[in-house]
Amino acid sequence: MSTASSSKTDDAEALRRHRILSSKLYLDVPPSKVPLIYSSSYDISFLGIEKLHPFDASKWGRICRFLSKDGIVDQKHIVEPVEATKDDLLVVHSESYLKSLNSSLNVSKIVEVPPAAMLPNCLVQQKVLRPFRKQVGGTIVAAKLAKERGWAINVGGGFHHCSSERGGGFCVYADISLCIHFAFVHLNISRVMIIDLDAHQGNGHEMDFSEDRRVFILDMYNPGIYPLDFEARRYIDLGVEVQSGTATDEYLTKLDHALEVAEKKFDPDFVVYNAGTDILDGDPLGRLKISPDGIASRDEKVFRFARERNIPLIMLTSGGYMKSSARVIADSIINLSEKSLIDMKSLPAGKA
Image (cartoon, rainbow, N blue to C red):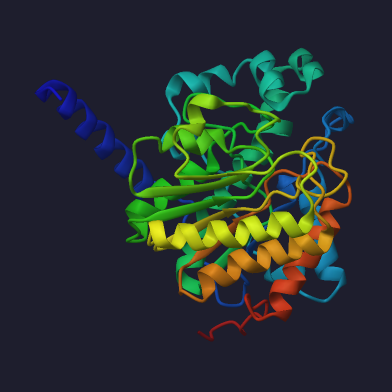
């Protein structure tokens, strides 16, 4: 590397570090709150336009309502994140990419809702992009909470198709990449394992960390569906392909083996778990046949993997294209609580 290019890289890193240290996203969360992150701003609802995409854009709120109704958590004990600003997003994204989101047409292609192209961009920013920016804030603060409490769940997030320069597949911002860069600077974390169990390949974070040995990627995905990103597949450290029609027992056996292999290959001090429910039997896009109980077992295995080794982890809900996903996710969180892998009890204010 030439001296000029080395200096340019150093300058870029210094600017990134400055943006991270200046950010307001790492808010202090009192012990009276549990490390479950959600905001009503997550949910996308605008003139019914959200119904034109198979993604359930209200699933995040329904997950929390299920948990509240079932007596697992009181709404007032859920953490409200801060919306990511442009400076926060520039930690990973380029100016040119963020500027491209000022085109409603470009946004409509990324979120796969063609009529959004006809809307004034101010409405697209407020009704579509702001919810995503709020979820980015949720993913980033989840890392801080996990470091403090051992675990955290962002009820949203997991936009694994978005990289620094490109969005797609309903993923506008690279929350996973952003979260990891914040953790490197703020949390004394140096080795991160991404466990991506969404049905789709996580090509966004794979491109972003293609040359970063601090990040190990375990991606278990259906190779016959979107995004078919063969370049990004080269950067998966441990890829496990699960073909269309794979059922629960075979899936969980493959996951057990993958976690064993991953542990031998890499020693993480932080885990990012992308827990998409598009592996559910009947999901129109995932094309796998995993039962609701299989989802709970999957999540339990990943949490056990991290908790038994005292590795902080965050869980992101990512993809899931059936109305039943919200109930399945809530039931899985309840199972994690019942197995004492997470503690959903809040402490009285002032207690630590």
